[in-house]
Image 1 (cartoon, rainbow, N blue to C red):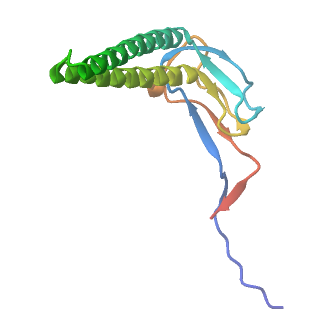
Image 2 (image 1 turned 30 degrees about the horizontal axis):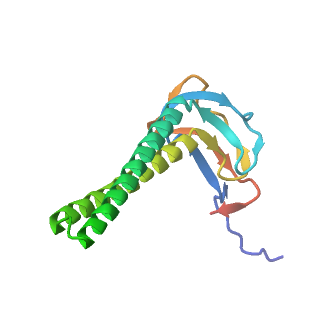
Image 3 (image 1 turned 60 degrees about the horizontal axis):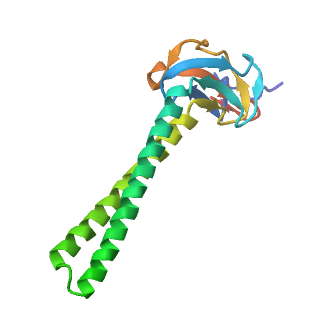
Length: 168
């Protein structure tokens, strides 16, 4: 009776998709919207961070944007008037150049204000922490009422249990 060659290997099973859920903004952690060890859908709301300060920031940036827009409208009107006065020799090139510079500065300030508003809106959106993938979520590592932020670390871990691999 002949025995076939045999080999033994140490191995383990590992998931392909594993996500460590973290806070991207700082604030007081609100209610948890899942149960430990349950399945979650992609995009499902997991945690909420108190959004009050981020809503205020959005409103402030929106007001700055609106102010910059008003300044630009005025600068464009002044530039147009100066151009008309130059055609009738009632304004100098120096005055026109100054109005053009003011208009360009106002446009740049508006672009900056719009970018600041977009950043504030992005930070507000990060107060809702959602599942980036579908799968099983582990134990929540932070409780409501705690102050969390990017430095806090992992709030929960999600694994996609449908795709696994054997590692040897």
